[in-house]
Image (tube, rainbow, N blue to C red; front, side, top):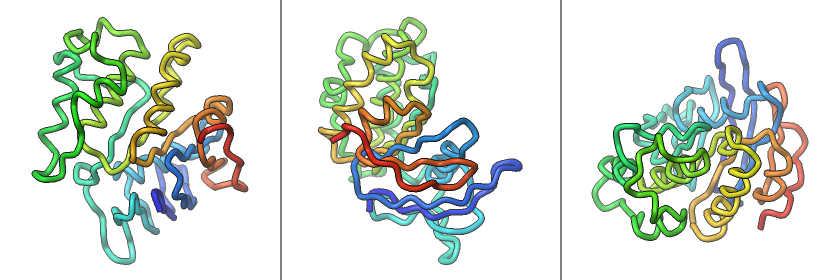
Amino acid sequence: MSFDCAIKAKAGGFLLDAAVASDRRLVALIGPSGAGKTTLLNCVAGLIRPLEGHVRVAGVTLFDRAARIDVPAHRRRLGYVFQDGRLFPHLRVQGNLRYGQRFVPPGEAHADEAAVIALLGLERLLHRWPSTLSGGEKQRAAIARALMTSPRALLLDEPFASLDAARKGELMPYVERLRDELDIPILLVSHDRAEVDRLAQEVVSLEGGRVLSPAPAGSGR
């Protein structure tokens, strides 16, 4: 299974009780604000510790309450991309890409910098400062930085939410390329059914912290 999670977790006064199991390359979590999508993503990433259950990604157990396994977030080898990209403002694009490489254990690095740059069309942006980039360019650079950590999976939290229609249209094909060309499972959080229909191979709908009946995927291959 690319993603195999069955967890109960609390975030403030919110209770998440959800299970997601899929071997598809791009799985989307969809639902209204407050449904528990980002809470689930943060449990996978290790930013929230579940009360019980397990989290397995690409066949590796990252959390299992019964077995007392809880891999620290920085050792989970997951590329997390937030809504706003969160590039380091004091580093140019290329510096941002190379930052994460220092945390990859020896012998486990598999990301090829030139290939990642080409995949996300960053050739002309490498020497730019983050403050000079458009929203879509920042997100592409943030995704590239995540890929340079040689992750076992990619977590995308509303990557299109802060973009206008034009910038969203520019970024969408790059996410499709990630899905189709990389052998890395992707967990995508979204509230937009249209983007999910285009990208996802499997859709998990959440509401009130629980998984609803499985929703059919759209055109994502």
